[in-house]
Image (cartoon, rainbow, N blue to C red; front, side, top):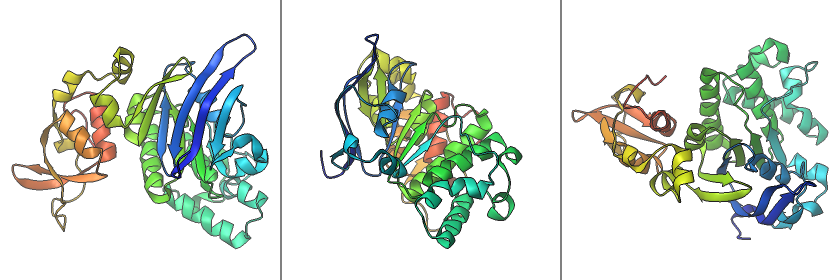
Length: 324
């Protein structure tokens, strides 16, 4: 295990009594601070892989190392205190307020009360929920998207080293889902947590991931950055799952409706793209930049960030729709 790695799967297998191998001799290293997405068809083993990290499922064979130590050697409660966990069904405690829900694990860890309250309010602000308005509400008084935001920051409240997210946004409507994805990008930049995120949505994976692991039949078929999977799919399965043949990367995209901010940005961005740009060029640039300038007719018209760029790419349309 390299020094930079925080999680390592060493020949990990999960086999059930009927002989089914949900995970088959998996080898994977996850670096500290990396946001890795596990994706694949139903039954490919992605959720089983995630649940083995916090020992909700125990492997049949092989080892999972957390900070170089076999996960089975940790006290399971202390292991889970250091791992935030977000589910599709967030299951907030209905009789508790938002603030009480968020502070559950910090209270269990006997964190100083004033420190907890400050962190709860800071986290609420991070996802656009005014503490003065939302801290004392009950879950029943929140929308689905608001409840899921609370679930995400509840997982962060005790400052865990690792964050596990199992299809956390899949039950939400498209508008709420996109807002939560944007919040996730903001939290990713703010906290830099090592995150393992399971989804079946390739657009979501392309938008959020530092690295994508595409799985099938309990094995990793290909792992790499969004750019690497798009440019160099390892086979037909990867190409079809991503849904972007190489000729799509030759498409010319229109960025004009996807820019945000003022054209009078100072200082001028160091990296500037033309409003009409080939998809492969956009992928290459956004893989290395959080946001870049956009020019139309030689004049700066605003900025496009990585989230907006990958929404456009994932949509597979030439400039359709509006950036909100």
